[in-house]
Amino acid sequence: MAAFVLLQAGNATVTSFLTLFVAETLRMDVVWAGIALGVVAGLEVPALALIGRLSGRYSSLRLLTTGTVSGIVYYVGIAATPGSALLLLLQPLNP
Image (cartoon, rainbow, N blue to C red):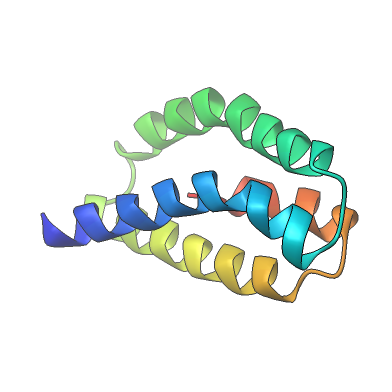
């Protein structure tokens, strides 16, 4: 249960922090944060449906591990992103 709480805390933090990160660190217009969050929101329902289908084929531990690795790649990628193109390309990895 602690792992789920920590994973969700990271996800909630990036959702609230992305606007500040885009504006202050990347020095881009705030609209890019809105676009990035919109991409994530648009992918959320299809991703949940896909996870539901995959849960019949793969173990919960494997799905959780894949999601965790995806999150790590996302956070490292966001920290290294130079601009809007990579910012948008990384959004499907957002757990």
